[in-house]
Length: 241
Image (cartoon, rainbow, N blue to C red):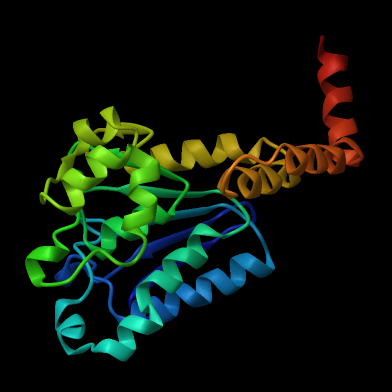
């Protein structure tokens, strides 16, 4: 791996974007390497902790590469395809964000299930200023995360969301002091790890499915009701009371 660092543990995978000189800008090599991460996590599901090396999460996509992309690359949805794949990973994903999460970096964080931010975090999508749009998921993820009004402020009016605004609008779960974001994300994953993996997987699928789906909820619950894990966990709970 040339653009990311991977710490693959039994109960989680930690991936650090590592192009510090470019503020961890997302280039084609990073896209390819993150696809490899997805392949591993699809085969062996576990929570993902995603963060950036140094002061920033990701300052955007690599502008030099974007400048040379044309219509065919746009139709291929190079960044969007990866971010959608991250969004579909079977187990919860947590982005630990400090500094800039702009453009493609913001969209990568939006693709994660949960975001933890430092006081230095700044989220924004300045793509229209470069003659393009935020087309790697922001148009459909950001309105779901913060509401259409705030999403339009970011996507159309160039508003950046600092840590306080991100917390107030629900974009992030918590704001922590500078340097504490990765530990805070590990604490969230520790809590996730105490839950049933199957219950987490089915809950994520149901929550992410469009519309209302009461019958799907019932089917998923029926599967869980028949699991040995459910019986063991409830027995242990009753034994403690």
